[in-house]
Length: 111
Length: 120
Image 1 (cartoon, rainbow over the protein chains, first blue to last red):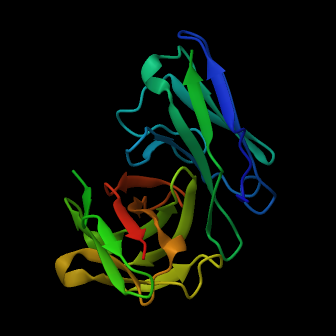
Image 2: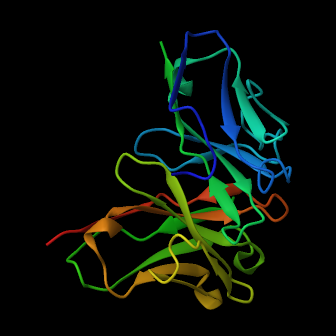
């Protein structure tokens, strides 16, 4: 069982917006602004999309945004495109000896 | 541009030893933590441990403690993940990833992954 909880799947149509939640605890998501999101296409390495809750690395589309409220972080993808279809993972720094926790992943389907 | 290049796929038998590598380039290798992440077939990402090549400070996830060893060689800018006795349950993709200096959960550069298959 993953330390952070994500929905197993979400779906949307091209042009729509979707959100993916990532629920942790007061020891990880709720305690630090060190939440990141990764996109992984089949057979590929993960790619950093959001870091420190809401920052985008250079080169990542501004259609991707992040936020946090309490123990839950959220990834929003606006203007869905077919190439956004992938698995998405959240991660957070944690005060436990684990140091880093990952979510179980969410499969995004663009219908 | 920072890059991590991992060693190739491996097929091993249970009980055999293995050491896979992750070579960094395009940045100062000793200044960034390198993590290892496991992804079992069809499953999610699991953080295994992390090493700071500058002084070899190493942390392991309690979920994996004792099952493998993480090391680094500053002279060759290479991090390693090794097992002394593989099990079938070690079959997975293994990724190395560079952690950003200030963003403590942000891994901004990933290796291409190494597939390890353990089967009799």
